[in-house]
Length: 225
Length: 225
DNA sequence: ATTATCGCTATTGCATACAATCCCATAGAA
DNA sequence: TTCTATGGGATTGTATGCAATAGCGATAAT
Image (cartoon, rainbow over all chains, first blue to last red; front, side):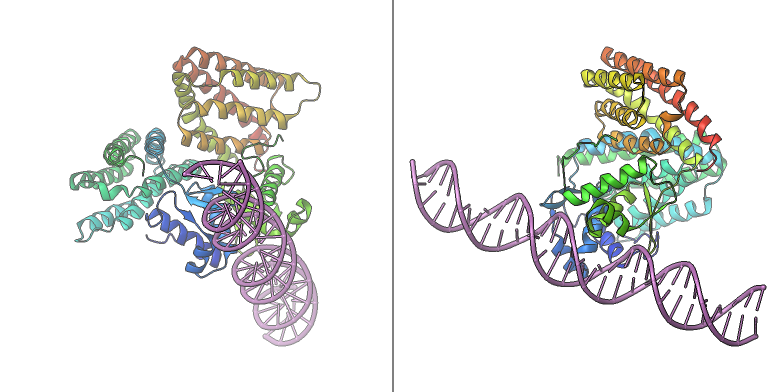
């Protein structure tokens, strides 16, 4: 997973621990339900337990792990219902936010084009790296929402999109589904550039519904996890 | 503020610190922009700095405080735009969630009635306690969303409603506005009990729009904070 | 064989000590 | 006066040590 250069190296040890653990969870290296021992993590990351504990508490607040008093933390395991909740909520607000972004005219079109092209390149590569693809996709959506002018909306959606990450969404897409997703991205850029909010909203709605249809099929096949 | 008996006394020191600091922020005791020193907090709460740090990291993840490397944390200060963002987003999804709750028939009608009556009592009391009123209101909305069946939605809205808390919303309501808000609550209970989702959704939309109109007037009068 | 009790071990929770960093004030030079 | 360098104090960041607790296995009694 590409390291998000949010705040550079804000806090050496804590940030290191946070990124490391989060990455392990999102990459599926640590499966849902797995218990995370502070000592193990501390040793493997190369810091003491203190920063690890702080990182874990942050991850707990973000919903990636569960905290149990005097027992430790375990990786949150997601059910089909959780996934459905997230997609339902997303489809309620992300198209709207996309429409706002189009109306605002504040969208960073160049950046969006760059990200869409980069995703094309990843998919076209002989060895498709789904972690990179997922990260690029997340940035693409984040960039759009940033232009909506509603920071709160952007933050909420950022937390919603990280859930499907755990399911390694893209890895289950068929080639046709992957292609359709990429095409949607380019159409989104065009819609945003045109400033037609109804268009932008519609495309985003289609994009999410299409994604949910693909994810749902796979998630139902893999009952609980 | 009424202590939320979520997980009982999950973690003596950390939980104590978390509740204490959070309460101080929501009650306005610590104004926005104020720097929070770990040592001070630790001393006043009666624990060491370690649990205080963990509590602060959790509060940072929840957006109540800002963390700055090697400088400490300061209470997040909210602008009018933040408030507007939150209300806009709320009005997008809470009415929908309320409709879902009505359709589900899972709403705890008795509890909602109890909460609505309790709010009536608080307002009728000679010395209106807005902290208690705010807490009851939060529980009322939370109880409705719980019945929506979308846990994610409930969590998102819970974080959205805590922002206006900082602005001590109810304290600025006129008697008429306060009365209207209470009336809405009872109508919401009736709508939910009837199972008429369109009704429930409409009332909730009116409830939020009405609240925003009141809050906006006051927030605009108090420019930034 | 089953169950209950007790103690051991692994692990978390908390406190304290020390290191690293930033700031601010102060002094000196241009 | 103003700008810069430097040093001291305050504050955060990290590590470590000890206390508390829960889980688990062994042992014994029924």
